[in-house]
Image 1 (cartoon, helix red, strand yellow):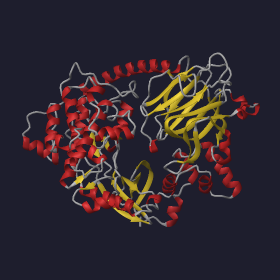
Image 2 (image 1 turned 180 degrees about the vertical axis):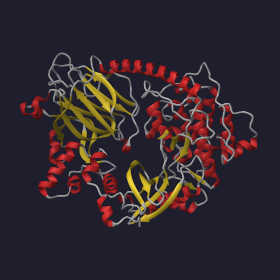
Image 3 (image 1 turned 90 degrees about the vertical axis):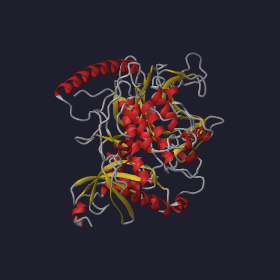
Image 4 (image 1 turned 45 degrees about the horizontal axis):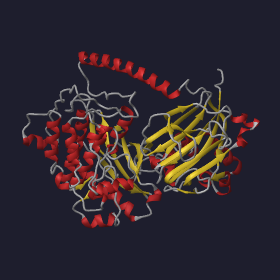
Length: 633
C-alpha cells in the first residue's frame, strides 16, 4: 500500500461535480443544476449525470480517478489527467517514495471486460520496460490494483510534435529532420529488441528541452518516442495471432504502411514508412492525403498511390522531398533497409559531414558517443510555409543557453518578429471580424435543447432526410443522420427570455461518415419569400472549417472566409460555437475563430438547420445562451 492511512485518503477525496466542471466535462450551469437536483431529490450527482446521459463511462472513470487520487495506484498520488488514447488514459502523478513526478497510464474500467485489452496492456508494459534509450520514454513500474492495470512511465514535460505544429506552425527543414533522426535512433534501439512500434506519428513524438550539455544544435528539441501501445513483438507470432482478430488493423491510417493496412505481417520497415509520413507532416503541416476520407485513403495506399511532398510544399529542397518519397515507397524493399543507413542519409541532408561510418552507426543505435550536428546553411531560395492555422502566431522553441551577444541578437530578432506578428494579427482580426469584434457577453439565461425520446418531435426532418436519436461509438446520445434537420426555438424569443435578440448556439459535431456537415443560421422566416434569402453557414469538412453563405439547404455554397484546419480532438469531436452580436455572426470551432458574416435580415431568426452530405454525421449537446451588454463595473 501507499502508506497513506484510510482517513488521510478520505481527506484527499474530491467532489464528483467539482472535478467534472474542472475537466469541462460538464458546464457550470449544468453542474449548478445537478447540484440543486441532487440536494432536493437526495440522489447522488453521478447517478443524475448518468440518468441524463451527460457523461460517458470513460469520463466517469477519469473523474472518479481524480476524486480519489491516493487510492488508485499504491504509492502514487494522481494529480491531473494528461491525455487519452486508444490503449488507456494517462495521468500525472507523484511517486511518494521518491518524491518525483511520473506519468501513469490506466486502462479504463469498462475496457477490462476482455482478455485481449488486458493482454495488450501487459505486452506494452513489458516491451517498453526493455527499451532504454534517450529517444524513448522510459518505463518505471507496472502492476494491478483493485481490478485496474497501471503502467508508470517517465513524465515528459513538453508538447508532442503534432500539437507543436498546431501551436507554432511547421518546422524548418533542418529541425524537422533532426526530429526524424532522433525518432529513427529510438526505433533502431527498438528493432534490436525485436520490437516494431506500429504507430509512429507526430502525436507520439514528444518534444522537450534537452538537458544541459546534450549534443543538439541550438533550437532543436529533444525528441522522445512514446505510446508503444501497438508495439509488435516480431518474435512472438503466436501472440500476434491472439492480439489482433482477422482483418483488423491497429494504428493511424494516414501514417500506416500499405502492408499494415492490408493486415500483412510487418517488420521494422513499416515504421520506416510511418517515419516518412511523419516527416511529411512535420514539413507540410498536415499528414499525407489529409483531404481524403479513410476509405479512399486506404484504397489509394493499397493501389500504390500516395501524395508527393513536392505537390504540397513546392518550395521544399529536392533532397528532402526525395527522401520523404523513398521512406514512403509502396514496396517495403524500396525503402531504406537499415536505420543506420537512414540516419547517415539524414546526416548528409542536414550537413553533418566528416564522421566515420562506424561512428555514425554507433550514434544511430545507442547515441553513446554523441556529437553535435552542424546546421544546414541557409538556402535563400527556401521558403518555409507556416501552418495554415497559426500563420500569424508562429514562434520558435527556446532551447539551450546562448552567449550574451547571440542572446541579444535573438531577442532583437524576436522583437522584430513580434511586431510583424502583431501587425499581421491585427490585419487578420479585422479581416475576420469585419466592422468590429464581438461586443456582447454571455448572460445567465442558458437553455439546453433536448433531442431524445418525445423531445425529438421538436426537430423537423425535411423530405428525403434520415435522422434519428441514437448513440455514437462512445455510447453518448447523439442525433445521427444525413440530409436536413431543422430546429426552431420561438418559445425562447419571449419577453421573459429578453426576446433573445443576441445569443450563442453551442453544440458538438462529429463528421463520422459524412464528407460535409453544416450549421445554418440567419435563415429567413419564409424560405420562398422574395428578396435576399441567403443564410449564414458554418461548413466543416475533413479539410477544415469555413464560414460562408447559401441560398438553399443543399446548394449555392459561397465561402466568406478561408479554411481553418481542424484540431485533433478526443473522439474526433469538435465544439462548435456560433454567436449573433450587434455587427453580425461569428463562428468558432474548438475555440478557434473561423469567420464572420453580416446579418442578412434586421430581425433575428430563431432557427438553425443541421445539414449532412455524402454520409451520416453526429450532432449533440445543444445549448443556447443569451448574449447581453457587459455590466458596468
